[in-house]
Length: 372
View (tube, rainbow, N blue to C red):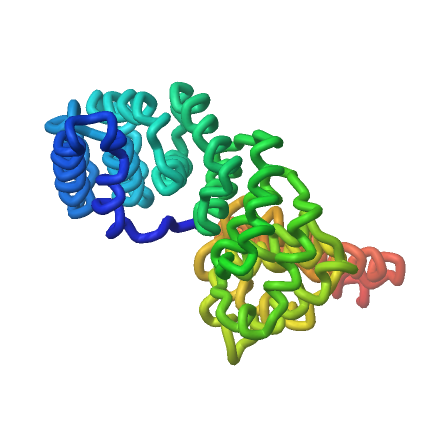
């Protein structure tokens, strides 16, 4: 999953979301406000759970600026991204709802980092408040027009749009243009997130695709890609690319997923995604056998998720590979089969005995008495 940049700089950033000095008394009130906002942000960044964040936002409700609101949402999402039960509870908390209202009110002052952090937070929480739609997307448009987003921001926004199922085509077109202009700054995670996000949104970045393909194919770049980045990028390339144009890059990505290299670090889900991507491109990867051995072993210990089973079955069907291992018989089925086999054997034995008796009768040797 996409990860935002670390929040250490957020406290400093909070001091930038203030009134212009010429609009206050010599800049002093703005400086005081900035100092207060920075202090609040520092406290938010240091929280260890969502409850602590909500307590702080409630305490400083009237003094929160746009960066404070973005940082609070960002930290809450970080704390809850692997805790669904707590997440559902927090989403209903009145303090969280108040924070959403504050975020919507402060959105017009959000800098690029804050916009990116908010979208990442909502996507991670899988929660998109209707009140945030217009103000936040308006701010995205303004910063895109100024090409103010950094490369990592662009990647996170595309990823968030995909997770939240938002497809503002005009904004995606502008993001693509900005990504081309910042191609040198895109790292491995950025490339994977952009490709994955565009693919999920069924948006083909015609202009960006050849540039990002060439960048990722460079050995120095490729050699630093992690399993999740290879998996996500392959998924994206399979949907928005072609075997002719992106096939060589796909082969290079597969070449890193070997038993003596990255294969041990892959999860079964990532291998399923990778296999599916090659099947989508109708290209059989040379390392398929090793991938399947690993997936089969993992599946035997812990069954694949239903969607993963569906995807790998479809992929292996294109490669004419056996899929019976996906549905091994249960203990009850094994016992039932054994009983059926016993019954069949008994029936066969009875039939043979009956046939023998019939033959004996025909030959006049139905019993020893007939011999006298």
